Image (tube, rainbow, N blue to C red; front, side):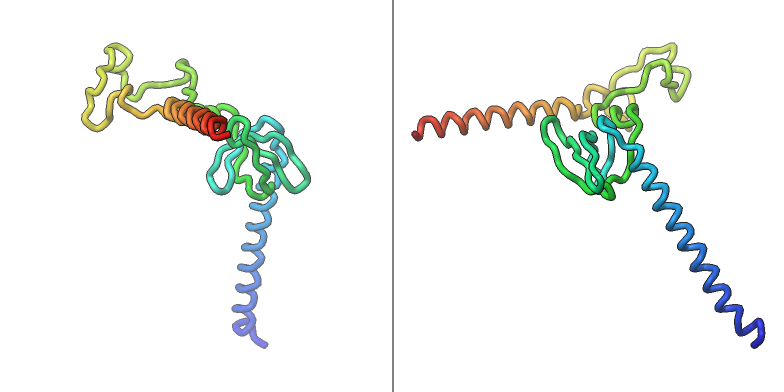
Length: 156
């Protein structure tokens, strides 16, 4: 047999080796990341949901997806273990410390910013506040629960 005949097989075997090696490294990195989870850690699932780890089992993890709402997920469903600062910024809207924030231009250091000065960007108070919306929805849910409970009492 000549080397020309064996060359396609050698290339194919080499490509397969490189692909499996890369996949194995990714799996090991994901396993290490999941091993970093501890109760109280913020995570993002592969579906994009943010939650807090409450308990860790052998193959499952108990997540608190909302205050008082718990769900059991497979460990493989955890897409990322987030640092506390990033989790709080995303979920609670916490801004980083003012000392670490650097303005885009120096003019904002000397001049007060005018609300709504730019046509491209709405004024700060015009931006939707997710926390207020969530609180309003929770209050609305409480009112509906109270109304339903009152209706059941009157029907009896």
